[in-house]
Picture (cartoon, rainbow, N blue to C red):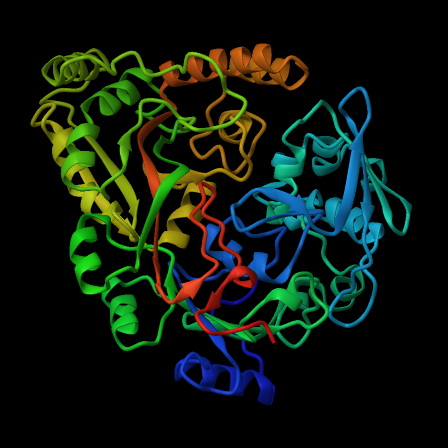
Length: 540
């Protein structure tokens, strides 16, 4: 993992890029037309096998391209692979690669993908997403050191033909392969520089933009990579990414004409922001669920009565109606509406239609039954993200919980977003805020997070063998309807165990300069810079 202090390119090109980005970056007549993008948190890494952050994906996806890639609509289309087929079992996929090169001119080959998939499963890489690719044959055993990397179900038939063998059928694989975890890395560069391969002076990429500058806590700059995938159609010669977590900071930059896009805004202030920046506000129904996790590795959250009581007390309807961005909906399930391959009666928590007064009475009864009361108060800490609507909701949650009884005493703690997710992954919390944006359009992408084998992203360490068995059974079910029914059965079981409490389903939130063209709102909220242009501009 890179230092948060020193990720500087000392080249003249890097310094020039910083100056150009800081002064507007070409949007108003500089030599290099520059797209200025605000991202909502600090970048910890740009290594696709180590990242787990959507704001880092904004940059990684501009630089690296997988077997498939997202089009402007967020749908999977050919990337490094120009075509593919799958055998009758649904488990052996064969990909034909096109003639693409890394930015140093070295060809992108099937061996780069073999290297990358093996690297992802190396225990020393400690990838937070390794378990998402345990569907690749022997993935988990390689990750846990039971088998050598050579036994992973990925092989190069020749330089332009890649074969991936799966543990079970995965009709969603083309969508999954758009995720940065599956991206290739340049083996010849990683082997030479190790963890430093991603630094501006070393990095080689196969996408349309290449990193030239990185000042941690401030900004990153990428210049067009002329030989990269999609570069010929890209309008902007440079993209500057500003790490902006403060609302006033990004609004000031927009007002000063120094920012073209910001990937978040304060939802409760939507009308005010629309009046202040006409045409900038963009929202769209997203595959995005906010859910709060209970740490079941420590008391009292190892007690289902406590978890259920705290979930019962939360007034999602009030939050959605009075605090959150217009368009948000209360969530009583984990998998959001609109997900593909889930044509069943959707499971929901059993108390969904219970009047609030009854919910509160039941919450109090459960906590008293668990041994809490005036002589033994329930004290706990709720950590929440510092971005978006989350700081405004936290006091409401605190009040909801305190309404159960005077002896329920929650403390709310605001955390810098990347630090909060680090604490969640380390199980260093009691109750923790978080959200999940679909990596691919399938309910498995949500439900696998609560599998006991998932690892770091099963934040509260939920473990139910019956849940795991249902998910495993669904993985081998070729009939999509039966598969959906098994997943719904698993979700219902999990919801009644209360390892998490779903809170709301979000709309995507972006601020976009209305003079930009090529922006397409989509449920995955992926918006690659190569699709964007400015009125009157053309690709150079």
